[in-house]
Image (tube, each protein chain N blue to C red):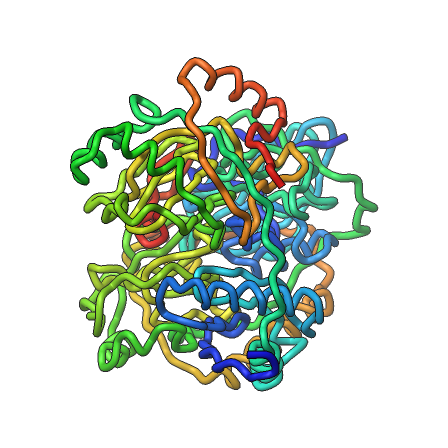
Length: 350
Length: 243
């Protein structure tokens, strides 16, 4: 059976799917893809169900070799150059990696995370229904840690596709990250306005637990400690230093700092794909508007298979990308192999 | 009083797919009782669109699917359930958890003793005499937050949290006590370590403690730690369930 062997690999590359649900009440971290939409696109291309476990490739790229047979793959998410030997691959298009061939990914040009989906999906032992890696909890399969050179990913059997396919996705426009205010926006009074009208810069002290933002100091009306309560992916905590921390899928399930606002589900991927040093803004919407967006997003996800088109087996020249600036792609604090403190720790630490 | 409606909790927005039902902004046993009661009521009655719930000291986080239900609907149903007089919550199970206190196992024991003008033995005695209740599990898998700490042991959390504290740490922070399963950052004071694991994916049950469980600690000598730790590694609970 074909398997994928990891050559060199970016830090913060790990197997991820939709994450773990149902045990957050025991402190079990949710985890799952940082950009679930890109995961869904990559899986759709190779005929998998939307949130089948795939490889979330970190900002710096890597090489991946097929062994024991050919395998079909697809890439979606952050823009980067992808090649198999002299063949250039295109994002959002499936391709065949022959036995012994290697796929090479360069550092991300825009965004941070690219999803490498494999026809049939990553094979592993799910815990709470998920293969997602969360190293601190000792969870994830086939390896309970980010991927390292020499790791082997076995691939589940699948009926091979008859031909390569591509996804035609609508172009995205730059716009603010949409939030619903609360649950503790009343702790901030007028500072909520400052939060909404300011430009925020993504700090290098960001990882799968939380993305730290730099900008004006958001002051609390009272103290900056609250009695710990539950968090969601997208919760925007304001710790004592007044610099927001957006909680991401590896967040602690509870936290002790007030949360000024929450990024809406459909926009989580947009913040996840923001590069270190890049600026972003927030825009508040009502819960009714947020629910309209959530339903539109769910509908769009469900419609992905309908957007598939036959591809010719692809050789798109991406030379233009070679001159692209990749400096912004490095997310320096990405946790790799050893246990490391996270910049997000302070907001959830007991 | 029977039949009398309870005061309504605050319903706070936690994004487009979760609500926080807040009974109090403080650590409050009555609020915690109502959190657990609402949690139980949701589990018993079922609530259309609810994905999972996360009980904490004073509020219940309710994750829901915005495609299945909408805000007005779920808010209304939650308020109806919260308004009902809470059913009696049967007392939780009671656990006895072994702890090696002090030395390398509890590096803050002496400092805590000094801070309270006690001997380390006094601290251990007060800590083991406490009758603790699990009020929530959070932060990391199996991290149990306990009320019931002897007020004379209450110690403000450290100015600078440690970035690493070992698995099995038994600690105190403010008026709370804690049992942690995995290595984690922590700003609490480390009194000892237990070989017991509150979380083990290879074991059934995976999670040892539930909210509302009662806990007592007992001291074991250092030379018993290794044997118990091996037993825990082999999948034994090690901690004793008293009832």
